[in-house]
Image (cartoon, rainbow, N blue to C red; front, side, top):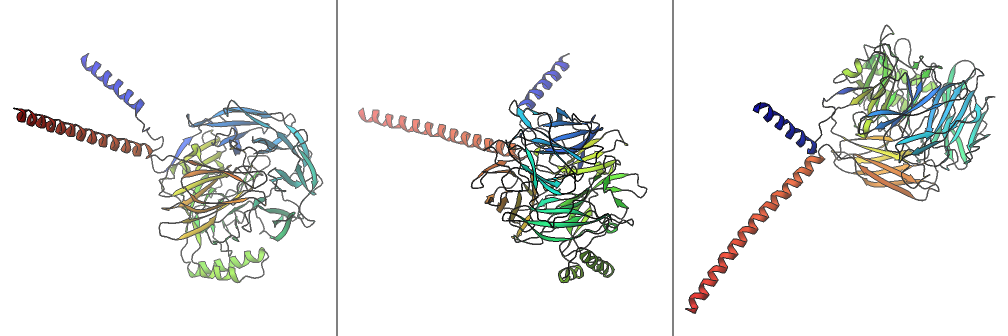
Length: 630
């Protein structure tokens, strides 16, 4: 009995101490990718269709499209619960199937609205806007009844700021196939009106599906336009690059994509240029042949082959056919190891075509190629360069022959068991769960393996490197509207590494929210891996969609989140820096408090000793006085 009382008392004291102990135990401890489960989405029968900060609390929320493609449900991230909770749902009144959802501030009030794209039997794309509202100080969100705007063709429109006014327009083809602009009027009753396209008559016909994007190609911190085009009925695709010019856009370049081209992603894969005129890398996930050859086009058009990177895999999954219509799957790019170079997420398909396993590939420095590999690289480079319509092949030839200094990709095999155990993946995305400064992984699944449709993988690799998260708002509100991001904002930075080398790069992805069509699943913020550095970020330049608006910051603290909010006229920028407390913060605080207490004790002891000595001297002095008096 006495022993049980002692044990109960010890247990009570331990629980009381743990309540006041500031060092909470880590949720994930292993140095690897860890399966986090569904995080509140275990019973969801549908797919994640979009990401966004719906309630403005600086955490990424998600929108889920139901399996019948009739209903969209918002799930909000709860930091204290480390999971998503269901919020509001939205159903289209018509019987059309929802094919895409774009969360964006469409009426310029600082709150995220929803643009719903839906298909029917009439070969048109329905466009509906549901205006959003945040109530109870961000604890819940509401969306109004969908408001229909003019229809478009089946090729999904591009969301962009065509006039530099911070208001979002839509660029696409109308029901007759003519390229038009859905101009944002700012009037909630009639939010969009269809006008002529800001592009000249040389504009092409959008492909369906397409990889069109708003990307800063010429380094002026203003988003340009990349269009994926359809050429007749042959199935061949081409591209056009329209750069931002005074009063609109001008056609800067056009060419033909290789046969069978699919989704295109954009990134500065190797920091090949240090100047503002850096051409953005075009990374084609599309050049996949039946023999499993994946051609990645770099500056200089050097090519990597799939069998050299993934010898045990036969191909990559390029289209998700479980959705109606099928969704193109681009390579997902993000700096998973914070070394400053974007890595790749892709779904690999086994030789039998059954197992679909997600795989993470690190961007690593390449080695000098062997004679046969160099010859093949040279031949393929020249062939692809000819397909892109470039007459001067000097740069490409020298780059292909050199075979040195190029980046390559290496599958991550150690600590990736959580990914390798999944065999029914149908889509992937990078996102930062709980804002802890690492890129985690969202896996969309068919449910054939365990019945689960959505799984999350926590990136718990320890990285001796730094990061920066940056976001440019649209200026609709002076502060607090963290979800109202500026589509097309761009970043570039300069940093000094531990070796004293100064490096500069465009941020990956190439722009903030570069693509919004076909369930692109881009995060509302930009995640920047800085690599190892012992200094501040020397220079960070951010540009908004307004041609007159850009700002440069110096001495930015790493491992933080930078929120930039330009005024609607582009004259002033409000800057906020949110520091992320490290896991060692409480230890530093405890050390500081302990050192302070120790110093106080020393001072107190010295003070007591000093008082004793003073009292002793006083008594001796008094004794001498009394003796003299005698």
